[in-house]
Length: 75
Image (cartoon, rainbow, N blue to C red; front, side):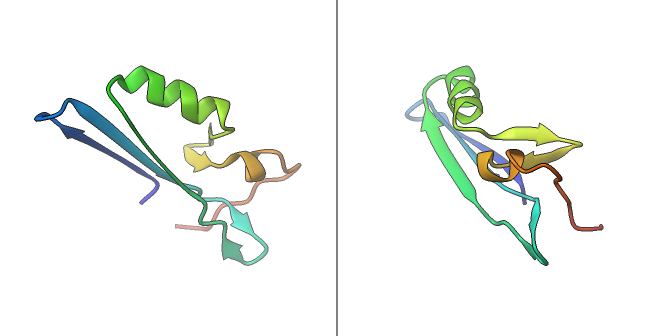
């Protein structure tokens, strides 16, 4: 799963977990980021500043986003 969002109402914490879906060689990259904060928009801003991007409908980490060509597994 590339995107997962959870909300804990008791403490008011939102957690977003992303998994990179790009291919590195013949294997999936697999980098994972999980951020929890009170404000959802601050999570999105932090992930964007760390290099996470949405590319052709896929979550891509900063390392893969910096590549000249990004490939994704066929579904």
